[in-house]
Every structure is written in structure tokens, then in C-alpha cells.
Length: 188
Image (cartoon, rainbow, N blue to C red):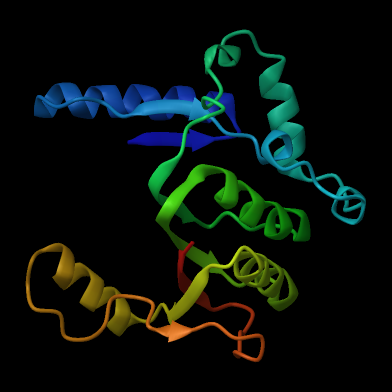
């Protein structure tokens, strides 16, 4: 298990928390690495023209901070059977970059599972279409109270009251509504 983010200071906090949890439970802490999408999949000219984001400013400031600069980048050859992501699309650039990062980091036959708040229908479609262009089988589920209850039951080993997976295939005409949250599964 490897935990990643582009914010070094956040990763330092994540590392401390993971180590403390592992020590308290007699387990092994996951590794923690910097994964910067701007390095993995530099934004195209249109995405780069977006307004400067708060995240970029925070990241730049943290890279100048010696204390936060100790976090190592993810190894160039690291690939994973499962990628988990939550709430990672804040702009058109992110929506365009994430499929390229998935293509680089997901092992063949691997699975991406992502919770995606639909802040912009266009950005969500950019992300989902990018996954399809990779050849991924992309499926969606609407995150509702019932979906969450089924996922929680499955996690506890109880018989689920409904599907806790993304069963509906994504197609270009699939309705997406700003403000909703969708669970995305993609297998490449």
C-alpha cells in the first residue's frame, strides 16, 4: 500500500498518522510518496491556461519549505493492481491529467475505484471520456444513502441490501448532474 499526494506537508502528516496507527496495532505502515500529476502528465496548453489554482500555490510554497521537502517522489516504475482516488478533480486540467496518470500507474488488468463529486459536468465527462480512450471498461454508480449502506454492509461481511459496485456502463450520453457524487470503476 502506498499513499500519495502532491502536497509534501500533507504527506508528512499522513506518514506520522500511518506510523502511529501501525505501531498501535502491531502492523506495518504503508509507504508514502509524492505523486505530482503535473510531473506525471503535464497539462496541455488549454489546461495550463486555466486560472492559477490554490493547490498550485500551496504546493509551490511547500516545496520551498525544507521541512516538507523530505518526502520522496513515487518510483518511476511503480505500478499498482488497484488505484483508489477520492475527490481529486478540481479543474479541467485535473480531469484531463488523471486518465494519463492512471494509464502510467495502473498495472495491466488493474482497477481504478474513484469517488468523483461532479463539480462540473464537462470536467467529469473529460475524465470519464479520457478513461474510455485508454480502452477502459468504465462503470458508474450514483452515491446515494442506499449505495453507502450496501457498501458498508459488504465491508462488514454482511449480505448487502443492494449493489455496492459501479454496475452501469458509462456512455457519452449518461446523465451527470452537478452536485452529485458518482463512484467510478474502470478496468484497463
